[in-house]
Amino acid sequence: MGRLVIRDLTQSFQKDCGPELVALDHISLDVDDKEFVCILGPSGCGKTTLLRLIAGLDTGRSGSVVLDGEEIRGPSQKIGFVFQEYSLFPWRNVTDNIAFGLEMQKKPRDERYRIAEQYLKLVGLTQFANSYPSELSGGMRQRVAVARALALDPVILLMDEPFGALDAQTRNMLQKELLEIWEKTRKTIIFITHSVDEAVYLSDRIIVLSPRPGRVCKIVPIDLPRPRNRTSTEFATLRRDILDLISDNCVV
Ligand SMILES: Nc1ncnc2c1ncn2[C@@H]1O[C@H](COP(=O)(O)OP(=O)(O)O)[C@@H](O)[C@H]1O
Ligand SMILES: [Mg+2]
Image 1 (spheres, rainbow, N blue to C red):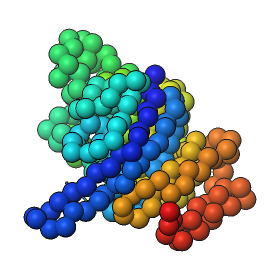
Image 2 (image 1 turned 90 degrees about the horizontal axis):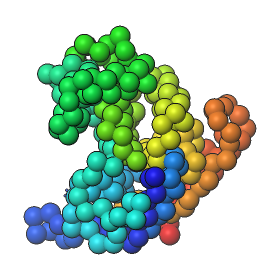
Image 3 (image 1 turned 180 degrees about the vertical axis):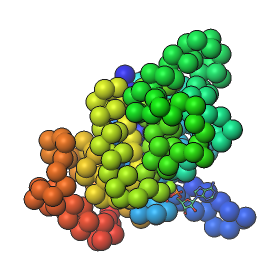
């Protein structure tokens, strides 16, 4: 399972007695089990705020987030998170990074290593089991971060611009690998990006947010068969339509 129902999610922030800033304004959204959804929007429109609320990492919102019939009120093992910045522990090797959450769950050592090995293989880093994050490239570190999130077997994986800091070639490669992993593991994925190209390549549906305050501006289904060809006319048309939408500032 991994079905998410978001209703009227609103989040405001107040800084130093200044005026209240509305970051998200009545977001309602359904995400199906095993769906791959990208959330696309300009910087500052509330994407990270939205993802943190789905993950139960922040409070003070109004509205509701319900995962498989249960309201999210705090962090949950059903939800995996991959951040943009490499959030690995520098003092742990790759295996021990992947096994970290399992250690917190007090799983026996044998089982931890067995699971870590399985996910290490899934992301193609078996040879780097004993390496430290500083010895890895950016793309490899993000593969480890994906393996670490999946090792806890969440029903939904939340990814906040995970490939944003990578060069274009590595980024394209990781996008392809992520789709393969998604097909093998059948998790629901919510992936945040401000790259239209990335969103069209990955998504079943793209949720386009308006500039602040973030509102759902448009939901665009992407029906192209996978693997998608970035140079096809259909791909280019979708990319242009969405770019037009964004440049009109998505006024709703
Ligand atoms: N903890 C916070 N306190 C105050 N303002 C915040 C906080 N988190 C986010 N914001 C503000 O909310 C808006 C949306 O931020 P964010 O969700 O990070 O946008 P995005 O990820 O789309 O770039 C921004 O104006 C940001 O400054
Ligand atoms: Mg962000």
